[in-house]
Length: 300
Image (tube, rainbow, N blue to C red; front, side, top):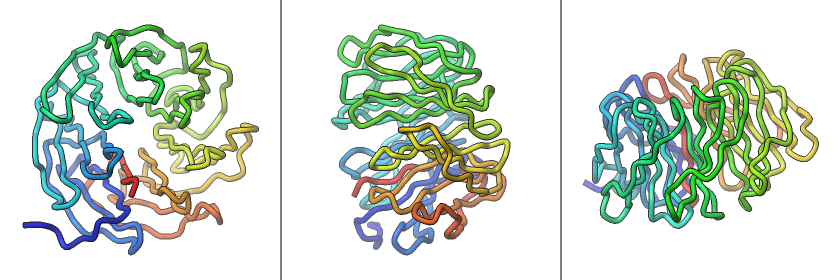
């Protein structure tokens, strides 16, 4: 049965403890749907056209494909042991899934839902981002590095040293800068993607894990799991205009397309904290499922 929910901007939250995805209406600022997916959903990403959402299910080794019009799973793809994240390519033709338990990057064709490549990576790949520069970046917890994969040849072409236990990443729209949250170093590494070298290390809160850029790329929002805060960084100066206390072991962060709201998952409280980006304070809290891990906002 098709959902009555209108086609507008929504936040999708992966709930690893309840095996569901919560759909949050970003205009009404409340949950409107709950979609059952695989076991242990963790990484999540929306297609560029907003018509599908992809979910990495860590405990059963699958990726769920959610149709955003009907809010139902239309396909389930077996990808490997412990998929940890998921990223849709800018053209929407591929999905990249780092498989934590196999040290691989799995590449899935979105049209056929078939695996087209399994790329060997350094130890414990965690997160992935893909840019318009035909490059895919994968952080590896066990190697303290980011692997650079050529999206055309599907080969690793460079390795960038970063901090301890690199986790989630954010990539500038022109793919010129990559921001890497280092959970074990309490820092964010800024990487120049033209040279594949780190150019800056910025201190943040305790155990940073999630990162997201504002639409104008003037700010970087960093979710600090250990301190229950979100650090706001000025990307030009590296300074911190604010630190927002959200509580509840924040893990994932995403920004609405207009930049007005920042959605932060709170694993311990089973909720998403919504930050007012203009005031840099907590605006509201929306209940989700058990242990929300990551959040993705549709572009429309």
